[in-house]
Length: 284
Length: 177
Image: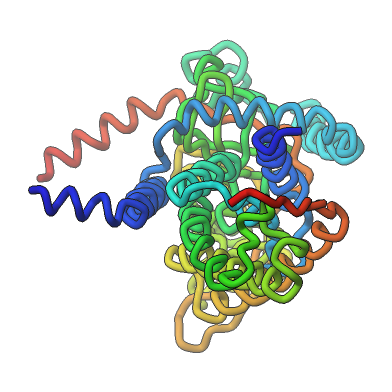
């Protein structure tokens, strides 16, 4: 026993160094798997405050671009108003049923909450955003986040007033999206090369793909409403060894100038998940 | 200004500069990440004990990590260079006893060549370990090599600029031993 203590005293510095290394590595690898680490919600609150201060200043430099993005979004939404569509009087007329959007609150599937982006990074391999809306304001982990131009990412961590969003520019981001042109689905992921482009995999070579095709979200996942823009096909990379295309997608969202985002809450998800889970149990 | 206060101010400034200026800059290339924050550890006083030095390195890295949302990544690299620092200093200035006559490592206290060697060795070590940890999650070997070399070059340039812009006066103290 005495020798053990002597050993510890003799090599205290090295052992202390080893302990700190083990602590930091366990933080790192645990966080990569579950996105939770010691003191993270406390530190999110503190770094969120610092980021907010910085954003107060930086926001002025982005005002023009933010405004432009919001005008574009308004334009797109205005274009969808039913008054803009009028078919000539005939037997077949375009009628939009408004019950489900006006009075039927019980039909509401997606609730959308606005949030100010106060922290943002695009330069690392694992990029996160911080938004100024947290648990008290209704944000929970695994909610989808979209921007004025397209999808942004999903919430991974929530503190009282702030939330951390894993951006689409993260090496662990995966999302199944759809080509608007021929409804084929493929996986969106980021290869870490450029913050302007993501990669789409799993589109079979039997379908025709062209540069400029639109990639949209699907109703298959509960993260985002269907039909939100993901990006456009910028390049088709030929891969002779595979039956699938690798597509380079230009993201719709400009991550560097993002100032506002919308958090998507799927109100019907609990019911859907309960059913799916019970089905899985029944089969087993 | 006392040495402790100076180091606390440096601590905050280095983290803010790294997070809000260097990490916000549009990247030149995906291999180039301008790191400067670890210069804080290289500038810590000689008088700090090895245990304290290792702990300061860990704490400093962890503070930066909470800003970048990568808990443990920079902390591991900072702990390593803080632990190795006394060995490197011991190798480089064993003859002169400068660690007793001056407060902190600098061009003045160690001389140009030993100080440059000290900075290059620790920068390379820091970047290699940091990128190695990143690379284990992601990427290929070319990425690893390219990023270590390119980032080290950019970091050394930034350190040189910082040393020239913020020249640290070091008084020669006698009767300290």
